[in-house]
Image 1 (cartoon, rainbow, N blue to C red):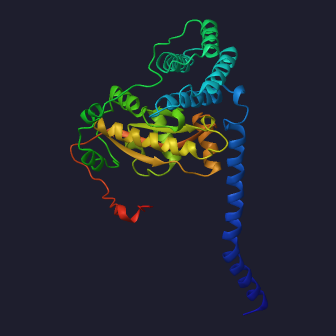
Image 2: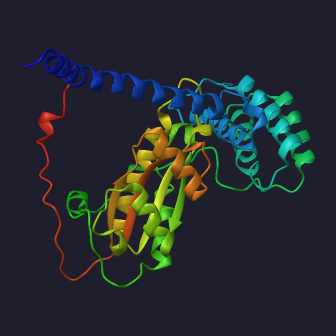
Image 3: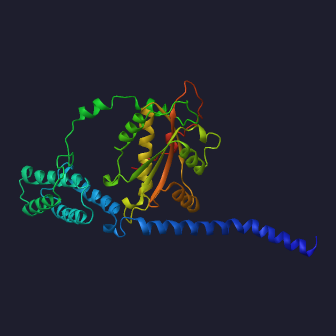
Amino acid sequence: MSITGVIKKIIKKGVEVFYPHFFFIHAFRKETKYFLYRMKNYNASMNTNKDIQKMQYTLLRENHVIEKGMSMRNPRKGFGQQKVLALIDRLDLYFIQYGNKGFLDYPLSTIKTYIHYTKDINRIDIPEIESKFKQLCDKVGNCNLSIRSGIKELNKSDIYQKINIDFECFVKARHSIRYFSSEHPDTNLINKALDIAQYTPSACNRQGWKNYVFTGSKIVDLIKWQGGANGFEEDIPLAILVTANLKAFLYYEPYQAYVDGGMYAMSLLYSLHAMGLGTIPLSTGFGSDKLKRFHRQFNIPESEVPIVIIGVGCLLDKFKVAISTRKNHLETTHYIY
């Protein structure tokens, strides 16, 4: 072999060995830069009171702290007074900046419950809270203070009566379906499933998820963007895109959007299953270039991260599904004593 040939072989071998490493470093830096950009612009710890969504999510969080306190087994008498005063001040600022439009009803109802709980049940006077609360209610004017908030008492029998189902069979009967009947899913069933899924637990009750229901030709565009349904993208009659809003979470919660969004998505899958509909979850874990195209193409705010696309359809009388054998739970579980 000539010297030139030897040199070419060495260069080729070097590229084969080192290029993947350099490609990984470049891609990692690129994705990290995009992650930090989104954190800087959309995390709720940044410019919180200048963004209505960030302010709403953080107010829901602060409101839930009060609810949690009242729901403890033996709350400290007179607990949370400074937190309630701070919440009233922020609600006042919210009203000055954004008005009400119904948002304030829930936290104001919680404070009303807190006043009753502290003053009438625990016999502790809280005149400053009462006064500031009344001033804010007078300022807001027409608000509904009768909505469900604060705490409620349950009996074990109440729970047991409502969970009398074979959940194991229910869960094991759900499969990912890749073709459906020609019948279009009933909108009432979709709305019912969405309503049920709304009861998914979330960090401090912030409920940072969003849904986009795709129908018609837009479904194919969405599924083709996702790219994991080759061969059956045109067989999906309805798709629900689940996102989570980064504005709902603080600086120390950079991944909570994916946790809350994932929990919500699973609830929605089960809710759709309970309605007798077939579903196929399609993942949306992609790099920055594809995500940027997603936001442009579908006009989804950049502050929202896509969690999953759920294809929905009516079941055929007979159909095939992948077996998808599961690991034994002992392989994925560790008991720590």
